[in-house]
Image (tube, rainbow, N blue to C red; front, top):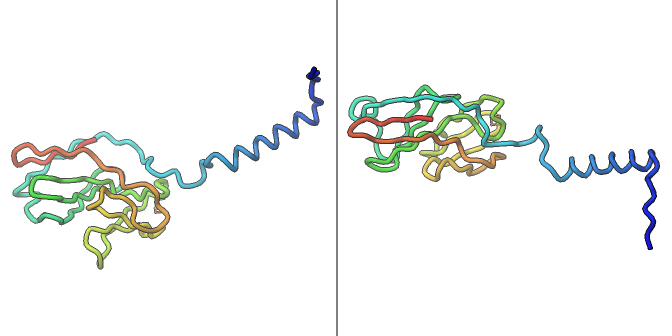
Length: 150
Ligand code: FES
């Protein structure tokens, strides 16, 4: 038969400290890479296919204003478009906008941490510390009007 005795205050304090340390080791800290969370902004952008996007060929990219740090549009095929926020997802609070790698088409790189993202692969990180893809906004094509919205 076990007898449960109340713990002494010092043992209880020690147990709490150890549990706190263990939790800190197991659970991700708020100070480390949280990824994927960038501020939510509601917007609607309308672009004309044969005017605003006339210079955007298949496989090409175009930078526009909007979102948190600008938007990069990637044209996957004749009628398929993707719109990504340019905020690096490694530490979104840095507010750094990814820019196109001059040597690799469709690869965007964070100027701060060096993370690279592949637009033809859903904006997934390709190298560097980032673990989460660029945030993608919704798009719809109605006639010759591309809508980008959140
Ligand atoms: S933006 Fe700060 S790490 Fe890429």
